[in-house]
Image 1: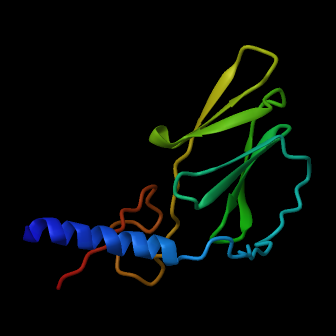
Image 2 (image 1 turned 180 degrees about the horizontal axis):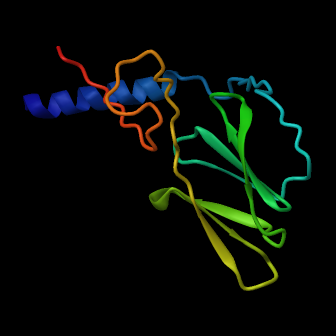
Length: 140
């Protein structure tokens, strides 16, 4: 009997909670324009990276890569002017561009390369080595 009264009590609390919320409360949506990009040409298609850090803007002959963190276009990828649509494939970290006319699809593999300023830091090997390996570690 105690279990049944507990369940009934919980059900009454839920019902009272639902009934006590007034319906028809006016709501307001507040919004602001976060920024604006002035492009050289009209955008044909736009998509964002899965992590929300990058915006890819397709226009005739290029894909502009916009960084939300830097609030600027950080790269431009030259493509065929016939491509007029694109999608982002999260699993492959790639853009797929295609044209409505023609039979070519191009896959653009996206890899982020980070630049590190290593001047003044200890190093091993020649200063002009073609490859630099930087080790980040915590000895604690």
